[in-house]
Length: 280
Picture 1 (tube, rainbow, N blue to C red):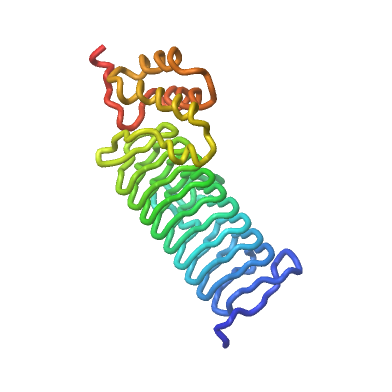
Picture 2 (tube, rainbow, N blue to C red):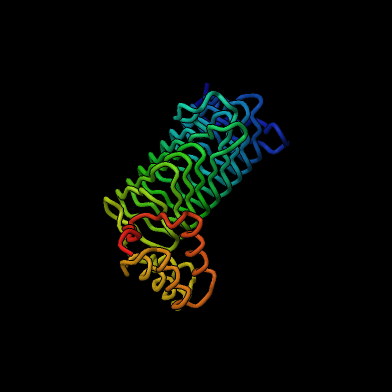
């Protein structure tokens, strides 16, 4: 049999897909239009793949995968792998992936441990080689996860975040929007929006001003964010006092409220912040 792609009809339309004769596609899988499937790909039952996706060779798309449009999944990926958690007892669950993502070689994304729930990846992101996203985690839109990034279970990553190679997020923590985590950093707490984190143990490294500027945020807004974090991380006071100073010192706006809401929603428990409550 030829190793070249052969043409097969989609299960939902008359538009044809390019599916290698060496791939396995379960008859119950639902494929959109203009999909390319490489050699030795395994597509399981209970899978849905949107239009214009390219699944490279040796990838496995397992039961529970819901993949949007215009995604490219590279060699050796495992999408909707069963959870690596002893609490999972075989419940039917999902991985939901948006549109326009690039998922590079040997990435593993685990599905939820809960019946009917999902691990979720947004749209427009790049997940680089050998990264791992654990069960029930959520990755926002337009994120970059560098080579070998590990996101544990039940984590939440905001929009437009960048994780450099080898960064790691421990289970159950949230990272706000527009955060840059430098290479090899271990995230052992909730990270508020717009900051740069680095080192081990994790340390505050400043405001993510370069990426915010590239996103079109005006300089005066970036300055207001920097004022907020001078009170939070550099004034050596308890967080509830820092919040009072922020309200007095920084003009009201969506960025200020996003920061204050993050602190309140996480009971003032954030990464890289020494607890000064005992000294006041």
